[in-house]
Amino acid sequence: METAIEVTDLVVERGRRAVLHGISCAIPAGSVTGLLGPSGSGKTTLMRAVVGVQTVRSGTVTVFGQPAGSAPLRSRVGYLTQAPSVYADLTVRENARYFARLLGYGAAEADRAVTDVGLADAAGQLVGTLSGGQRSRASLACAILGRPRLLVLDEPTVGQDPVLREELWRQFHALAAAGTTVLVSSHVMDEARRCDRLLLIRDGRLIADDTPEAIRASAGTDDMDEAFLRLIRSHETTEAR
Amino acid sequence: MSARILVATTGRILRQLRHDRRTVGLLVVVPVLLLSLLYFMFDASEATFDRIALIMLGIFPFTIMFLVTSIAMLRERTTGTLERLLTTPLGKLDLLFGYGIAFGLAAAVQAAVAAGVAYWLFDLDTAGSGGLVVLIAVTNAVLGVALGLFCSAFAQTEFQAVQFMPVVVIPQVLLCGLFVPRNEMAGWLQAISDVLPLSYAVEALTEVGRHTEPSGTMWRDLAIVAGAVIVALVLAAATLRRRSG
Image: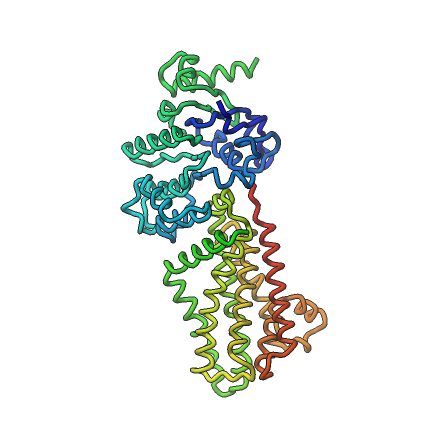
């Protein structure tokens, strides 16, 4: 299977504190990979490194064989930041059309993305007047434009209603089925079961990198929260030795 | 740089401005109100009004565009849109020139209205053409935009950003020759004045006031201001980093 993202010994420091302590992993293309871990574990930092906006101390990140963030990748990688990064003083449609133009797409593609995130009815509304959930979907619309080869989504389902969340996950899988590699972070363990593959991260270290089934099997429990807890404990015992 | 991205970015910034009607209103009305104030202040002396109003037509767009741009760019940084833009094919210069062109166009409208009011309502008298006054005013506005883009890198909050106004704008206004003629200043003040771009903008405007035809000094001064714009944009580009901590 083709590898979409390859992270090797990635170390990131903020101030003098290490945020990521030598992370290595490979993410297969065309899959939905969940990046799970508690708040502050380094999820956003790892995602920023993958899109190439994070200063790294050492190690490498390559995306489709090219250094993360390099020019040829910029039109093929969609990035949803954790806080919605759209212009509050533009309408949803204007935002989508602007980001579409940057990538060389027309108005039709922008309108399709707005419809896909369920904002067709609010397309003419200023983003500043939307609810938090709608605002983050407006931001998501700008990330899925043009069906990128890699989609990096930082907590896309936070604050969305359950029906919509279901719909968003269905779309992530549809995108993956069409060949897009999706890397999606969440701090809700419940969302883990929806991923093809999981990366569990805690305190800047990877503690698991496998399919949800394999993780549950190795932890000996069906409950994802419990599995995470057991993995942390066994990880700490190994470290202590 | 890409023409497609530059046009899209300029359009996006103008669209943002269009949705903010109050800002557009303030941009157009404030210089006119201030000119009216000057008109009534110097009611008794037409020559003084002519001299000061002419210089103010250059100072207003510079000051206002500096403030507007530093806040706009700070917002790009703090709301995360800048980080996202830098993950797209957009180049740094596309963004910087986009701001320069968009706010330059807004400044052209502002300067045209202010100059129109000054000439027709308040009988401003200059030997040279009003078109040159607007040209210099717009160049000044773009200088304000370029310095605003650069200074926004040093502010983390809007509170900090507005404080760059007194730091960057007021010394230039004080030393540009409006209050004390530059050649009557102490040598060291004159030396400082010589490296501040606004001094040249004011000299260029004064030249338009004195000569019926555009003078060589005026073109040289305008070129210096344009050069300062380029320097400020290069510095601003250096503050835009794709990668940050």
